[in-house]
Image (tube, rainbow, N blue to C red; front, side, top):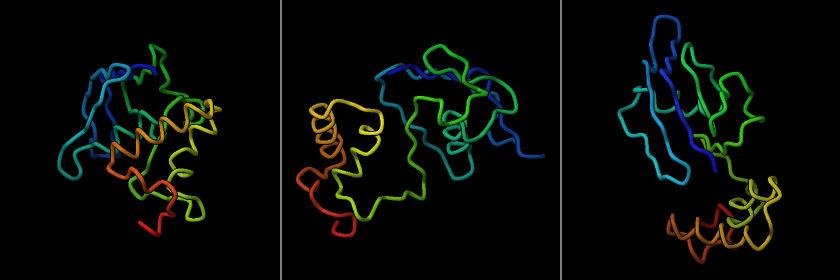
Length: 134
């Protein structure tokens, strides 16, 4: 896991400044939340970290590397969109484990990590259900 650093990041859409000169560091392993009212730049900030938006100015660093110009698939970042899409034919456990399997994480680690995540969101014991059964 790498740290995330935003250095003087600004994102403008024509005449609208969505993110204004934001600098922050999120240490590896740190639990971090962006809170604020609708339209304050939370989603735009996350999209810049994930590579789905380019900063108008400033830089995005992952693990000390400037990734501002890298496409999303070349960044070691997982993204869950606001309009989430679960695989309806997979179980909850299979949906949660999907990204870990794609990254070729060891099977015994996948099971443990999925169990931890399901407990974190109070879904322990529901991993064998399909999304429409929740």
